[in-house]
Image 1 (cartoon, one colour):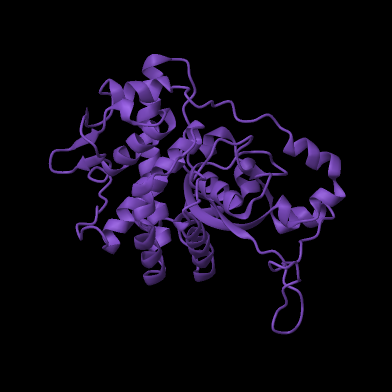
Image 2 (tube, rainbow, N blue to C red):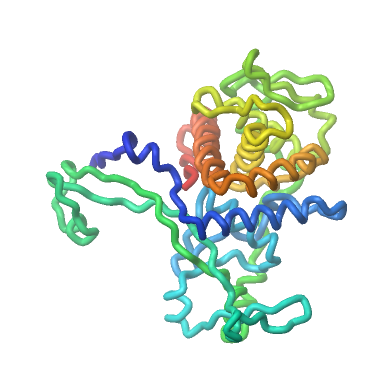
Length: 356
């Protein structure tokens, strides 16, 4: 069955649409993470190997791409043990209640009217299909009841929509279902081990299978738009494969700017354009590494970008949504290339899921 997708026009311009409240949620999360990164004791990765990917508790289907990264970062910032989330109606159906918010001393936080404040949700972005047949909008039930011939004539539009979801730790799940909680917290860890090499990335980076040349030597990592070349230090200079891969993917993300029509920000270090491009490359690397099961590490250079990102987030409420849109495109570009190389090496393999 061939399903037609509308990828142009208004949909292309829309990207990820959020209201001001949702934008504030993302900005708050990043600001909290960036504040923590300024601490000299910060050693956590953006995305670390974990025992499971973030997923909805009921459906047990891992979130993909951008949602995977954001929710993993949220769990790291909040210290949540289990990266499982649910909608409010799902938790009430299970007889769960939201926890009341407390301050550092354990006191319940109160609203201006004296009522307690409860844990707040985090927006998850999903693309939902809308079906049209002969210019008439169909419900999901009407679409499902069509025969195969009529389904061939359907135009399907995918629109991003945000849903508020809560982590299990924000509820009384642990108290009401202690056995289930114990089971969730003792799941086996991710099977990626430090020092394990990804044969597809090896071929892309070391054997010239990326879209531009990758040269080794010197003491810095950078992408040169004028030459269309990535330069990396010798591999032996990196402290392990995780840092090598994540640094290479960071520069690979920069190198997608031309083909994806993304402004790389020519204002120089400290400008908003520069900060946005560095943020796109950094989060793309984190997202790709997350989907490949590779921890995303930080170094002193990344810490130096913190103040630029924070200022940009404060100055422009659309900074985060714009970054999200660019990261989605760059992530999918790299994963498509990964699939091409992987398929050439293993013709029967399944493709990587694209960023949501």
